[in-house]
Image (cartoon, rainbow, N blue to C red):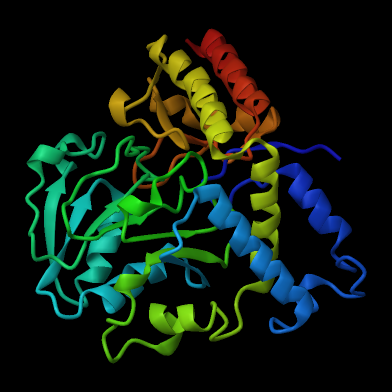
Length: 360
């Protein structure tokens, strides 16, 4: 069997040891005589999987005791609605920082539930920067301030944590969670879909400070009410059991790699390989400002778009998959999440150099 280098933005590559363990346990999880997919979510076998996954995630992120970890469904797009349903009651509105496509999606959804103030935007730079903190026009009475920590499509990433005073900071961390250490205590709420750095699609991680619970709008569905889900330990309804199981295996794999500090060092090294080459040639162009370039999603363009099809065809033949950029921005995009080995980035750079020599 030949494994390709999968640069998909999501669902994304998973660590091979995790896939192998899941395959070995598919028919019989640790002598239970059944697959995790077949288990009752309230049975002792799955309850042990659930508890271990939550404990390991808490350990990896050093989550303080006054935060709840919720395993939910619906992805980050659902959370775009669930966040304001749970947090905007009693406030005139909320502040959002617009740094790209996923910020815009969050803003559009939140506007269904209250007044949204776009406190800053990088639209004037075609979303290749993050607005400096001193330009943010924040409302001190806002329910929360919302950011997208890493824009998967545009490739911009916060390399700093914004200070927003006493207003809770909320972040969509779908595409960079667990790629580096994170001071959870600086946030009121963190959320993210699992299908990039955590596990299969279907699971959504929510980390919420306890004092923010219990304020949901009365029309909030019970399954989306953070307080009710916290009281039920994410078991108010049947959770995405298999996705939680695989996520738990990923958490264990991350600990075996040395934890998030080690992953951050590895991710910086991988990104540097690609960005250093992009900056050394006029054949390719990396559009994002260097101080906010994503370490997870690297968009780039060829100097001649007419070569895009040939580039992608050659990459496919070389076992370098899913490099086509998002339709919104075009060009190419290499997603180099935790599971992408350095050898994959080295292979991509070698192919890019060869393609330049042949077509430059």
